[in-house]
Amino acid sequence: MMPMKGMNPKQMQRMMKQLGIRMEELGGVKEVVIKLENKEIIIKEPGVTVITAMGEKSYQIVGKEEIREILNISEEDIKLVMEQAGVDYDSAKKALEETKGDLAEAILKLQE
Image (cartoon, rainbow, N blue to C red; front, side, top):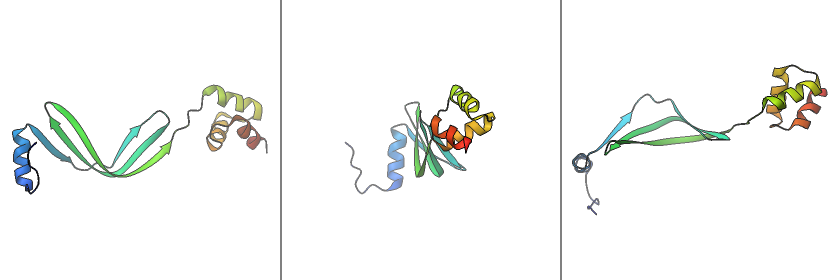
């Protein structure tokens, strides 16, 4: 291991350059979105650093996260709610979103 304690930033940059590691700050990044199967992680006004080493790029992201759940509502569910509640597509979809995909609750809500 190389000693890092007491190393000033210029020495650190020189050593990284010798090892073929390059770091670059990305400016103007407004948000970063990481999409998962059932949610999104949104990082607003992030600090993003690109680290290039041995031809590979890595991204370091720093900031406050916001987690947004994603509902996967099927077309079949929307059609069923439309038929049962006698409403249009948009109303059925909105009701399913508001009830987090609960078919029975969406139908009852629309029938009120």
